[in-house]
Length: 245
Image 1: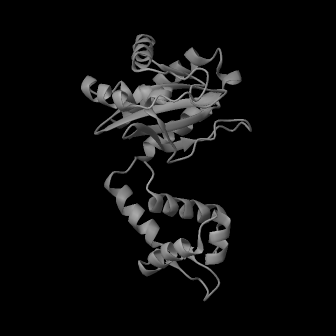
Image 2: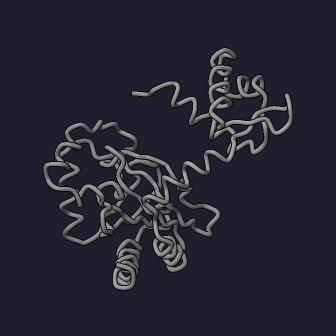
Image 3: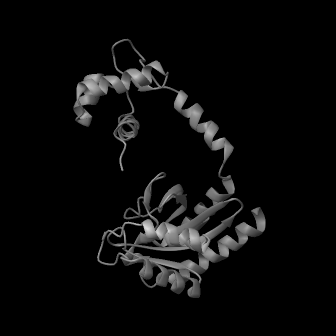
């Protein structure tokens, strides 16, 4: 269920991230197709709380540094070490594909960090992106780390929407795929959520967190390389665990 004021707030932040310059009330209302009254209420609230300011009088609003301060405090309480980012960079260098670090947020997979492929055609992962747990290899690599009762509860509430022709459409299908993945020691994605995208995922044992690694790219490049990519990932994870855990 979408909460409209929160959805609008996030849309406003994304708007400024793309615009990267101040915007007036009229510009925001027009660009986001919002009523002027609700736009005014949202901007007035953020202005009063110090999360927006006017760099020049009557020249438009822009997010203040309060966002960075608050988010920095949140991140500092549960930081991701630089060693994990270096692991992603190493995987990109060795495979040429996009490397992703992901975790669990409710019934969804959320992207925490990304190492981008150097190829012009690549998987454009974005930090903060969320997808259903059951619909991707990454999600299943996270599900497998959960106690059976917790996994069953999440899958029971899952909405099995058909995103592509290969989307898994039942709890039984997800559990069977998890079992196959455990037998071969890696999780495979075959355009189940995003058309023409393939991926290899591994659970990543990290103290206090359920994390997973993903290497993803166009199926045309991933086909025939899955086992080799999985072997590279397993070797680098083993090195990471030996050095940093």
